[in-house]
Length: 235
Length: 235
DNA sequence: CGGGGCCTTGAACGTCGTCAAGCGATGTGG
DNA sequence: CCACATCGCTTGACGACGTTCAAGGCCCCG
Image (tube, rainbow over all chains, first blue to last red; front, side, top):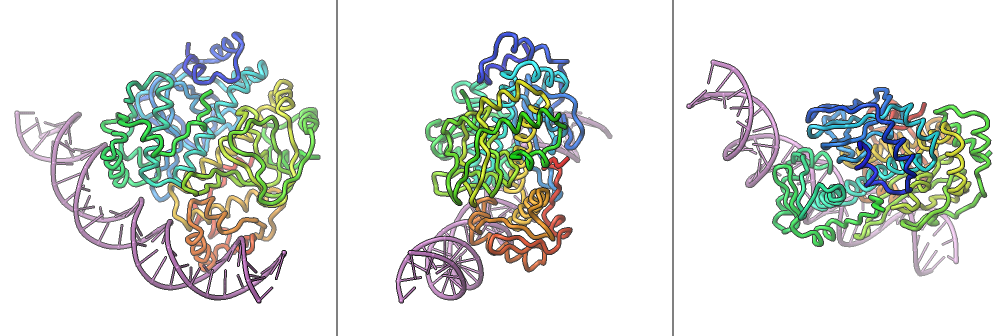
């Protein structure tokens, strides 16, 4: 089912079988995007929401000075722009990092779901708010953490999120980003990100090469990064 | 009515009169907090939501190294922790900046509202997502803007939000923060925030003194700060 | 009068950004 | 098949933005 992965990562509140069926039935169609393709442009009116089935997606903003800030990274099972349902347009853009497959939910179908089931509504709402909690954690990262720690924290977050959907094992996982992407996510320059990656490797905490992360010392990394997964609301 | 201010700043989607009445009726009671009092501690289970009626509120996180990051500022009419309804607990704390008056909505009452009206649900959901959009704008600020620009941007945002609820006139408004608070919101040290405030004053853009902001040149400030109010979803 | 917030300023330092060059891998067209 | 461009990564040198440490002023309040 299209919604399997989403439902395994979002179990609160518990859904009745008919809610699950209704959610699944709300999928209008699927679509694919090529790597690095823009999926949603900021400020364009939207009429459907995107559930990520396969591949990686980024949300980002470009600044007039030519800088680019990545606001969120999405993995399979994430409801990438469910927030476009109440907002109707987004103040940022969405792009595919890899080849991507998505399921599309028309806004009227989402509205029908909310009319039908308060429990399902709460689940969907909650999923958008977990994204918001991750946004806030990123504020803490860029606002209050040093460059190395920022990168370490990002690796921790992505490990937990990917591990949960079976996309990490033995503390290794694919993170199909360039060093430039990493620097755009953490508010650093590519040069400095590169140096900090070397430092993390030399410290024996984590190694990043060719879009792949290998965690060398999970406990050490977690404590070094000040990582507490509470903000991911894993329950 | 308790919800007047909230409803004037949240007009999309348009509510039926009975929805307005239902929302107003969902208020269980009001409460007051003294300045600098902690209103919600992180990770504590919550059973009600807080609508800010009077005063200023901050959401923040403390880091182990003793730094403090302000995640959001709230003005009257903001539904400060509506997101606690789907999340049940928060990953940050909430504190009063001034003496504060709030209206409290028990979670079961909110659930009843969502069961009753999809339109009202969309409005409430939307309001939490506008907060999330502001969170993302803050990511851009701390991640991609220089210190002076960050402060300028914050003043722009607060001016627009306060002006909308009649709490700013002639480009002057109360912003009851210390310079330390400003630095905690922008990810700077208090010393550097102080110097950047002087720079903004000397540039003739904006002056901040005694918790009061005076915008000296609104157009100049807006363009200097790269401020585009789209992320506030004012419509 | 003393103490404590809050603000202000100076001086020295360091993290991080900028500029620049070079490397290896990949891909493409002559 | 090789020349050449491109992309991503790496490293060095230098400079700047922002931090740290320190001291002093102002004002309110006990």
